[in-house]
Image 1: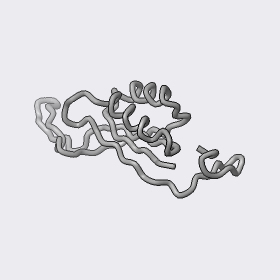
Image 2: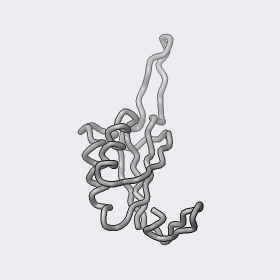
Image 3: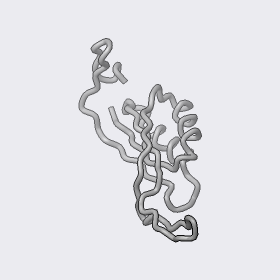
Image 4: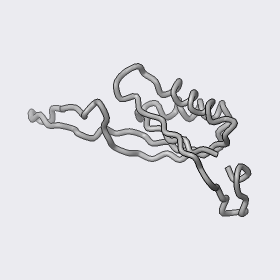
Length: 112
């Protein structure tokens, strides 16, 4: 089992959610986050004063998937989130040692 975490641009959330549903992902967790990478933020003008925005709004999507679909999940996220511009985001994949469904007590792939 794998935990796939993706950091994407906020306006790409619906596209990524639809792409994940198409490859068989049953559930996701979405968090609004802020951060920066190579972009290093940007400057904005507010009431005539210029100021620096160091942390840009992003969306973090997390989903636990079985090993047999992890590659399709990664490809779906990359295809749906890509704009071809700086700041498209990243995908991280972590191995899960155990998953337990609280309601039923199921463990392993059945809990995903």
